[in-house]
Amino acid sequence: MQSPNRRSGKVGRPPRLSRDAILTAAQRILDEEGAECLSMRRLAKELSSTPMALYHHVQDKDELLMLLLEAHAQGFPRPEFPEQPRERLLAGAQVLHDILADCPWVVEVLASDKFVSLSAMWIVENMVDALIACGLSPDDAVYAYRVIWYYTVGELTVRFNRERSRGETATPYRQRVMSSVTEADFPRLAVIGPRWVELTSVDNHRRGLEAVIDGLLAQNA
Image (cartoon, rainbow, N blue to C red):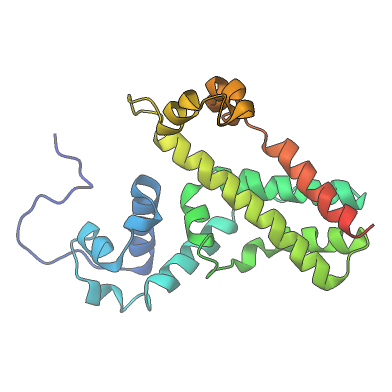
């Protein structure tokens, strides 16, 4: 039986567009296909409309993404943070990671470095304030925040891509390469190589985050 949400293909007046309908359809594409598949043309097709009709409701794809980011960020829970600056910084960075881990498309969008969400700036405020409380200057606090941001986005990007490839039956290329290194050329890697995939698949995000933060704070000691 055909889903009532699917159009029957009959010729007739297209459904009335609204910003809410556009955002709902765009969110569906992001969730099911990822940010790289979202375009005004793809969105118009989803809505049985035309790209030109969408521009009466949103200025362009950038505005569309900003609206979606804001809507998503407004639902973020705001936990209580520890008072001690290092622990507050660590907790804020973990919150940032955990929120992004639940929404791959947000990572894709924010990784372009074009967008920020006002409704999520409390996370940045907490981390920068904690860094300054740890003794960093405002300039160094921004630098340190960006280092943590790069680590977070990089870790999640690798994780998401690894999860997408889990269904592949072929032996991963990196496993074949690491299993073929010779002791004569790579004495250390030849010993570790057979376990390389196992070792690099362990979730060490928290351990790495603590190392990054402690290294940044040590630079200022």
